[in-house]
Length: 486
Image 1: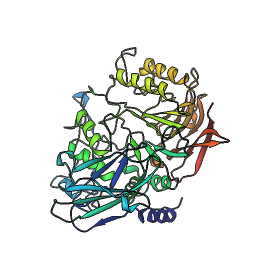
Image 2: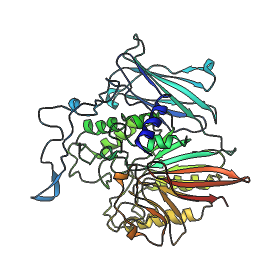
Image 3: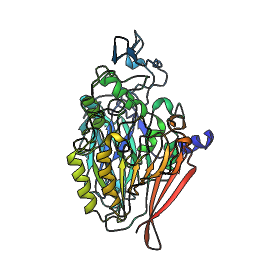
Image 4: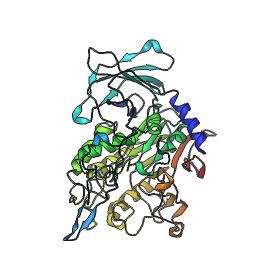
């Protein structure tokens, strides 16, 4: 897709989810629509001081950590993340929050006489000036339009309005054509359009997906420009990436499910008790809390959703309950934790969906690089990985979708036959870490490129089908597999 086509497509996208603003506060981060099922949804909002992220600020220096010569286990930074004599508010793409109040007006499509208004809610300064609305009692398989309104106080007029749209899922006893997209690995400095963001977002919008899944590494706390060595810098990274116009336009109209991984929790290959040797004042626990404030999320970060008679997805938590990577493997070593494992097995066995998908932040099948020690495809977590693969192999029409790896692939576990589809990273600049020379007998498809994965559940001659497609960042179909329910 050439730049003129992307620009034209972007213009078409923004023609609908418009942002109207008159005075502070604004909503420069747009909205996020999350956790949609057949009768509910969560709408994420944030109030900001300006209508757009700062576009003429100072660039961050790329200050990477260095090893302490006196202690090889420690790291230090040879300079500050923000240039001396300057503040975060002077930096490029900063999006300061603002105090105020928000509410939603919601109505079914073509029924503006049925508008429902939420109560005005005050955004929380301790949660980065955000607020999340849970919408209940929605009708299944129904398109809803809504407006997020913001104002400075209850006596003031509305100063900003952001339009959004969502469609609820079909009930679980009726077949429905469902289209979804999956991505992983989204880094600001590797975006393909410097002013607008990652071009896969307008490209994915062309598919009009029922829902979108981000499998993690939504951003990279531990990458320079800046390194998130404080809560303030961690929140800045969220505000920056979701102030980008491509991201904002997409999330104003696409129901999403977010999963976190290591880089958007804290640092590379992290676990809860990991020693902090390079993240400054920023802690694992703070990373967990910030994730919950920055994405629409319900009670638990592991959950399952049904989309009509033919599809059910499981979204799992891979950081909060895990054992240290360097712990000896065995029955006590875990990534998921006992409670999540029991929940997963129970809910899968209870499901009668034609297709069942485990969507994991990290690989279950692989293969992975020999020097990795962080996922179920590595020997370090083989015991639990074997349990998961063996369980899935006993289920009809169950597949694994994963993120984390910076290349696209389809693989088959030689022992159990479990099949895994990896989306690849969000931009071409992000692809790497593997090569065609690493291709093995496990691979049915391998491509070292950026892009995304799409899935389409439909019926052919009355029988459920699931079509997986790997796309380039421009939307070109690179690989296609049609699966038929047994």
